Length: 161
Length: 266
Ligand SMILES: Cc1cc2nc3c(=O)[nH]c(=O)nc-3n(C[C@H](O)[C@H](O)[C@H](O)COP(=O)(O)OP(=O)(O)OC[C@H]3O[C@@H](n4cnc5c(N)ncnc54)[C@H](O)[C@@H]3O)c2cc1C
Ligand code: FES
Ligand code: FES
Image 1: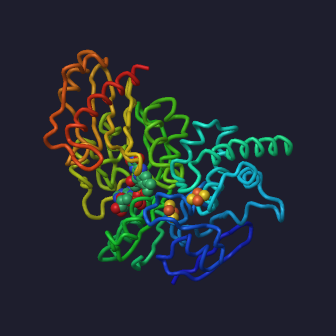
Image 2: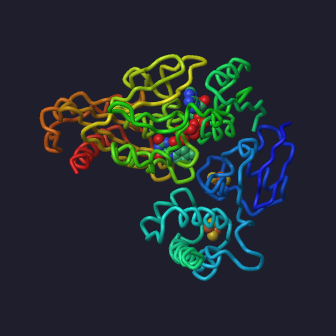
Image 3: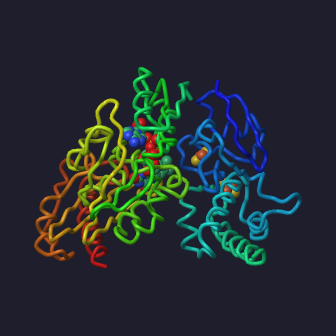
């Protein structure tokens, strides 16, 4: 067993884990943060995307011990109390989900995109979503939601400046 | 996932020492290839030696006409680095089209070259640009480094520490992605330095990345897509699978080579 400590959604957490524990399992099983999903065994679907030190990564392809000392954000950490994050709001507004299985990973990936590139266009969004698979929507409304969510995040940033 | 011991050394020397400790010890860089391989029980290491704490393996610098990239530099860092973008835009673009953003945020150049996947992008780009792979023991020219499918010149206990890429006059890499995996169904890199051209192909060869001597000769005469008219590669020895026959891949190699030359010429 190894002990790990990290910050998850702003709170310090620690636990004893076997070295082969995946970060996604630590989040889901130890911390009961089940919003981060597991859709594949091959690192291809993106259902498990979270942020580690501000960058989107696949939580299924990282060990919990590799996140020692890291700042982790999961889908549960986006909303501000009852107020949805602008990207979550945009997914709701634009009907960017059907079954919802891929949605946490889509939203976390999209937030990283909006933080990396200001006001991304459709082509940029589709290229960015290379690692997020959706079996329901056909992506059209996801792309629309991300376009709108990115604009809302940009407006929020400008208002804050 | 099978169990293993985990180590996080902070120097190359300590990493090599830790590797000697377990009977089936292996290093993990970005883990984007290794962890899925362990999950699928295709690898069963006794010890994982994580290189992420090794500062000597990180960073990008310009040294005497070459860009030197630490083994632990991620694809995302190469893609967004201003020096790489200015000096070798083809390399920044190659790195920026590997997999997806999350793969690029973890996957490293050292892991990619050490793995030498026959459909990986870096081996072709680095071979066309005549790079040198540096290890804790020696400097290995790319032509001698990539020795076969998933095979390299690395010996036991030898780690890639950095890759040095001479700045070419012109270069481009064009990938025809396999849509599901995003690896190269075929990818072709071309580079021109002082009038001499090099052409390297990934995704097509049964022994992994390879150079195309006829194309290089033609392009060293005239670095233009037309110079490749009449040049062909033999389908014998190329991969054939459900995604594409050997003949199809042979045809793609020349089509992509022409596109790469056009792109390199801007
Ligand atoms: C969904 C997906 C899509 C991908 N698409 C592409 C693509 O389009 N093109 C492409 O080129 N690649 C692609 N990849 C592979 C990706 O680029 C990997 O990051 C890369 O192959 C391995 O790098 P890594 O740092 O993750 O290495 P790891 O997985 O950590 O290690 C890979 C192997 O190299 C060894 N190793 C690692 N570092 C060193 C070192 N410094 N010295 C010696 N040995 C070392 C390890 O022991 C291991 O055997 C994809 C991967 C995924 C999951
Ligand atoms: S669960 Fe599919 S990429 Fe992580
Ligand atoms: S909404 Fe069902 S998988 Fe995307």
